[in-house]
Length: 192
Image (cartoon, rainbow, N blue to C red; front, side):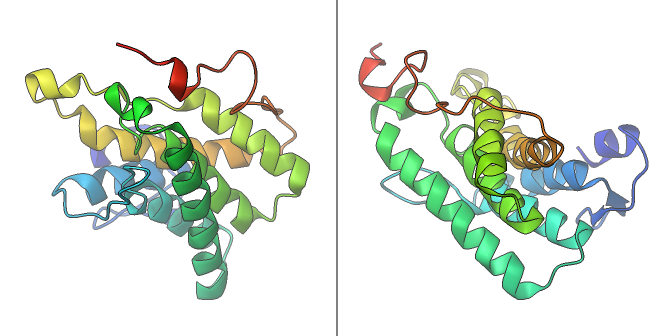
């Protein structure tokens, strides 16, 4: 992943753990993957989310890029956790049957953390959430073959959260009803 991030282009926004620097989104991707490799990260039982793996790398990358300190970083992480865990609790347990919540609902948490650090207003944060939700992904199918995809889920959630907030800051709109709209397949509708 670190090699891939280097290939995506040179940038000096944020640190990639033991591998130089990259764009904020690239650093969030590489660091999100790295944080989940050993499976020693946190878990919130009700939401079944490993929140630290995507939210902290997203917040670290944006805080570094925006030259913000520890208090802003901690506030953003708390807000990101709050969003991810609440959404995870709302969609589980049925969501967990098919989806890896660290890749899906934690994308929202990463967007909230990044958006808080960027100082997004209410409308921009809503747009960031809409854009984060449309990118959320993470099927459990990697379990069938032991594929490496599981570690990609938190990395992509972190990167997608940063990208969603960056786009919202630039005026890119997202679906304002990404969680409750009629086009959303709710957890109670997911049946195998």
